Amino acid sequence: MASTSRSCNEGVRDVVLRGAGIPDGWAGAVRYERHEENKLIATLFTFMAFGWCVDDDLFFIPDHARQILQTDHHDVIHVICQSEKRVKELVQQMTTEGYALPTELPDWTFKRPVWMDGVATKPDDAAEGGTPGGFLVS
Image: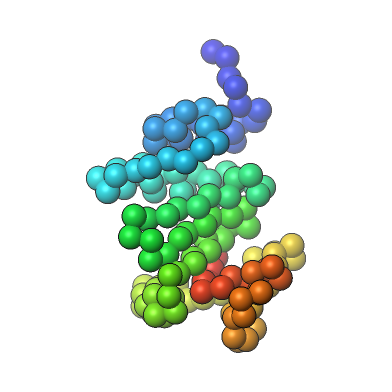
């Protein structure tokens, strides 16, 4: 059986993604319906488990658009919210479930978010590695 993957990890990733309805080598958007939650979670898990570079970062945008989730190759999930109120709601929900915001960076290559220093976010912070209206979960 011929494989288009370059490594064992990529082969496993491709098998899982095909099961989630994503063809090999797909670089575009994918839309899941609410009843396809298992496919969405499988996709998220696959890129968190096998992602190792910026090309493996994903953006999840729910229909309600109250927040955007981004997985990244640092094993971090970023959340950017529509409003400060939504940020506070999510932080409280995560804390209640036992997932407090991290106090340390995941690795030395990670740009320190502004909120981690307790400094108010300014509009130009995104250019400096900050996340306006957002936080991360590691």
